[in-house]
Length: 566
Image 1 (tube, rainbow, N blue to C red):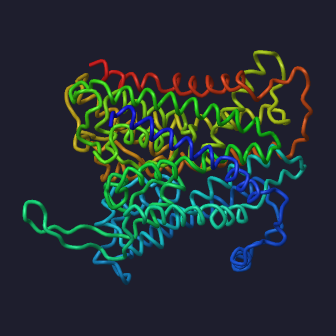
Image 2 (image 1 turned 45 degrees about the vertical axis):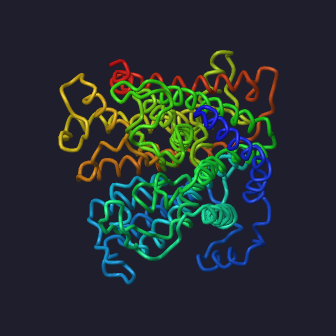
Image 3 (image 1 turned 180 degrees about the vertical axis):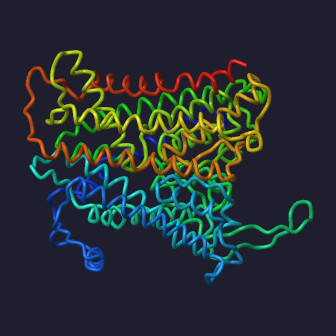
């Protein structure tokens, strides 16, 4: 089949299924997080049991500070537990002969999975036991995703509520409902689909076979299907096997590949409907979805054009496969997956991003540097684009000489400051992290591409480091494969980038939610800037692009753009 036709069919299938699921799933999630619904009598017995065991008063709401303290406290405990589990896995039963994980790798991995990044600086099938995978990493795939959704819902409540105390909900209730009522049912359905396509599910550690050359080889096994489902639905990305979604045991067929892409996009896309339903204006949700779609489509078009044309030093005929691509999925399936995984905070890969053309690799890098808002991770994409929307409203208010107002709440100095701080966290981490790496740390022994300054290899080496910090700060987890990050510097630096990149924006978002919830709603007037429709959508799109372009253009010019011009 023609590569362009195959790519078009896959995209049409993804868009069609998302369109069908958009209203029912979006409205269902709105009912799950209903601000006043049935909290006094939870409809799930297991949910009631969790509240009793955790001594949680499900009827009591929290201020933004209490909500943030709960979220950060849970994340701290998660990091400590994951670290300890990895350090003692060698003495646990059913360890499969796996030794304890080194302190540096254990720290980096614990931070990675607790922050929804799933950056992996190790080979999973030879480093992590099934106990560590199931009891530690898989659990965090649920919990970290539910935390992102809870923060997004808290921000929505800030716009909806008008209480002097500024209460924005109960974190523990939102976390429990997100796990039990949304992520768990969906992951069961997706796991069953994967099993039907041949994704393995086994608690054996491997089996012996004879290779094509006659030599004996050992093939790794794991409970893949169950972990693969939540890895994608929660926009986590950490594969239970090292090759991730390029491995035939994780992603065996073109159908499973399309299902994986759908799983990545499903919740982030449908959350825009949830947003519109909860605030009582579906047009607001459609406007946000329109901006996400426009940005996603633009990056997809650039990436596919770059990958289907001539490729410089790795040039091939248009549409041909090269090293790093899976023939089972084709060019279209590889590009669609790459743009989806970097447009969200997933980081799963079915092809090697390091093998992409300079412009193709630069496009997926830019997709992360936009802030992963097209459509973004579960929850994090929605609250990320809402922060940019507040900045856009502020800019629009300055242009017309009016007090900025968004969804019935005034955007004063405190609100704009918190939104701006949330937007600026990621650029600071990425640029400072990359700069310090080259200034203070020797990178010659970890870069797969080195050479004299200005040569394509040296430029690509710079892009690898920039990509690594962009991935960590955006809690994505994908990487350019030419960079070795097993040394103490990268383990520590990227670990801190993941921590600050995840939790500083969460604190700013929750503080903003509390400030908004304490305000009275202000009725719109003739001078109020409309926040729906094409005009505001264009303003929001321009704001997102300008923030990324003005901030990262010099770095991109030194990396992928310079390499493409070579």
